[in-house]
Image (cartoon, rainbow, N blue to C red; front, side, top):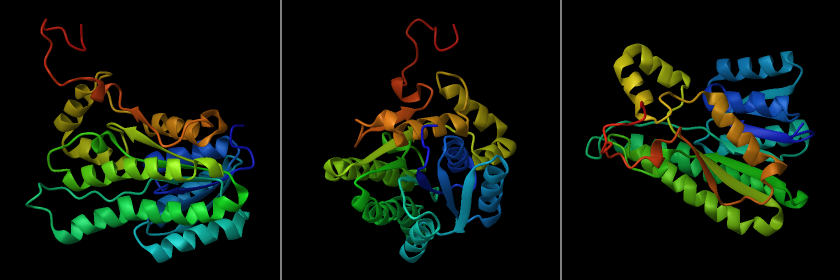
Length: 263
């Protein structure tokens, strides 16, 4: 087991990538704390982990509020006595072009997806420092590497997460604490599956835009998070791994021969 006797806290773990990561960590021997605003989803994930023989607890927390971040860190240390792994994964998505975004939506995106990542990492690092070991994995996105129409707030927070990852990575490299990020492409999480039901043509087009011709499953991203959190990545810090089915490897230009992904 790659995470035997480790304690992990995962935000946004009531569904999607966070759920897959929580279950993966538990299978690999970690005791997992699931933090999410979605109590029903969080309790379900924790229960399913326990039913499978793993150790898991749920705590309801808003990752955009400092007091609730402090509470979920305290919950973890009170329950398990330590914190070895943090997966910052919670997010709030505000849609709209720059002139359409309302200030409160913009601010809430920053509070959850960037400031929340910083403050959760800060409080986790305070717990990790005395033990001189720890791993932080942040969920960024290929949207942090590129620009997208009507996703400006999301683009900004995910780009910020990447540089936050670099800063933490270098600042604590000699303290035994590593920090890395994963940049997923299109992942079939519950919100995206709802979009598939409403707009199947858009869902299909997004999958086909990926050279692999499909959406990722949450487990495929959880596998990357597991690697970065484990000792197998012991010499990796301040870095990010792109898991997008080849999407950002493509320039976007059409094939000069007419032969594209399908040939």
